[in-house]
Amino acid sequence: MEGEAQEHKAMEFKEKEEEEVTEPVSPTGQYFNSSVLSICVLAVLESEVPIDDSLTMTLLKDVFLPINPRFSSIMINDKNGKKQWKRVEVQLQNHVNIPIFPIGLSTTSYDSYFNDYISRIALKQFPQSQPLWEIHLVKYPTSKAAGNIIFKLHHALGDGFSLMGALLSCLQRAENPSLSLTFPSLQFPSNPDCSFSKLNITVPKCISSIFNTISDFGWSLLKSSFVEDSRSPIRSGDEEVRFKPIVISTITFSLDHIKQIKSRLGVTINDVITGIIFYGTRLYMQNVDDKSTNAHSTALVLLNTRVISGYRSVKEMVKPDAESPWGNQFGFLHVSVPELTDSRFSKPLECVTIAQEIIQRKRSSLAVNLTGRLLEVLRKFRGPEATAKYIKQTLFNSSMTISNIIGPVDKMALANHPIKGFYFMVVGVPQSLTITMVSYAGKLRVAVGTEKGFMDSQKFKSCMETAFEMIFKSSCEGSK
Image 1 (cartoon, rainbow, N blue to C red):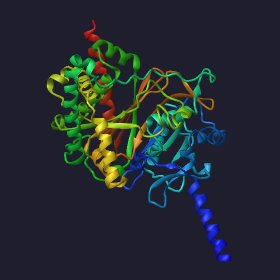
Image 2: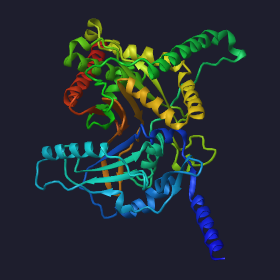
Image 3: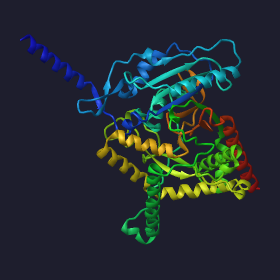
Image 4: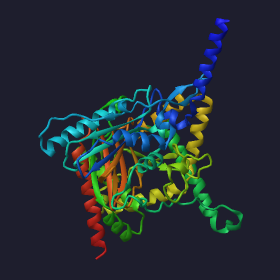
């Protein structure tokens, strides 16, 4: 009887344990938290006032954790070997970090301490025994802020759109907390209409779309499997690059100036930004090694695959039939970085028009959709680990990754801390160069993650600033 009671008790415990599993881990979540990939996002909020941490635990418990069950869950393997999110009791003290630096230093010295600190936490792996997030409160003033709040979130929790939605749930409008934050409208181009009723108009577009899809998907397949970018000043080709320290630097551009270039050339803001990045990257490569100007370099551009007009609340995103569901909803495209010829060097606006041509052609392609299908087929027949290896090779074979999110128009505040600026960085990527962008209150913040000891972060930053100045100056001269 005693043995039967113990067996019954063990079964009850097992059933209770299984009940704690809230949901299966998404395929992309499994890829990003695998034996070959562990990709995280660092979101840095720059405070205008010194950091007061007295309300930290209360805010995390009452505001942050309720946003999504994944913030209170760990990733486990069920009895069938499939990954699941399991709810656990969160020990908040294990997730909050307050570094100690020497006191009484200059802001320049604290810049150095802060940069070293963020480089260390970028490398540090999350323990799998607790939820995959943490917060760092850096109370020392730097040249850019009175204090810094760093959220480190594992990419398995969601993509940039989801994590931005979660972060914004904790923030308020600085001048009036009762009002919601506002955002620029998000517009996503539709695919060519191939319906019979418009056949006479759209046949050329459909043919072009089919050709571009085959070309882009075929090239993407080759790049992911066989064709590796040249080693260059922006690509070390080191197999262990994802374990190497990185340096994170940022550049701020005026959105009004970018819009001025946009209006002058009749292109989109994304075209202008992409042109600046391509031009700045080639300037850096030429500066480091003039023979590398024409090296074959590919940018992996991450795209949000949601068809929406703006951010949704977290409550909307977690609904079963949500128009914009929580999770990782994105794809990637291979974009060759245009070579910097003598004529393009003297005519920087050409980099923007070339970027526009590339982006327009990519928009008429369904390669992103096919890539998503390919990953699903790989996962189904070879498993998530094999798919993660394919994604890792895709990243490694390219020279850099570019991603961007749209931030609020209004100035934000977090627990009465006005936010002067913010940026994010994707870390754990097997590349020497990662570029991210976010708009906020009339500014575009570009963050650059470079492999420490291989790339010169300050020189790259200087080349990006030079690229912007040359493109802006050329656009002003052309409008006279």
